[in-house]
Image (tube, rainbow, N blue to C red):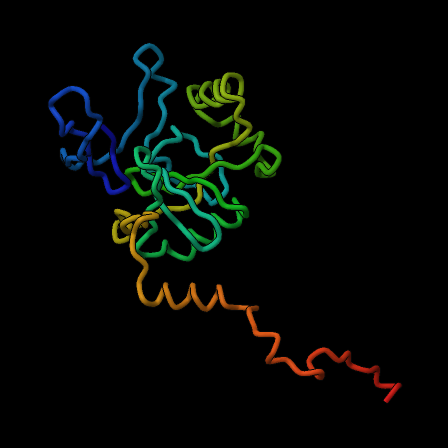
Length: 222
């Protein structure tokens, strides 16, 4: 069970009853609004805010790094199906301000998360942390510090979660396209484009003249 970036709770239902299949279908459960804090019962003073506010792009994320996972590279954005490994491209582009921040924080691309509240998060290498990272780190809730320590010590993760920006309700949920499979037929446009690309550089030598092989003479020799 998980919660999407639009606040919808979804789960998986097994579609085969013979016990030998791993086929599932995604089902909708309900909508939910996340707010408030995650409160450790034994130490309520170390509560973690679910929807931190007052952040600027590039600030350390002072909550749990989680959400719907997406990826990007250059101008392409997609969701990868964990079961099929197929990549589903976005139907609509994210707002320019979010794209610009992602490219600034992750110039080579990578993954990012979108929380149920619409907060966009990503991770950056520790060597690219914000100038006031030590001050920000001191202000992080203790459980968040512990999670970062576990990721570093046990997972060998040298990345810091940072805030990118927020998507409005109009920009959520993310709509994705059907993935292209290797066995899918090519459209006429794709066929023509591919044939033109394959033909580039091909020629019949009998069509060339002596002039085609002559080197240009320097201006001073003419």
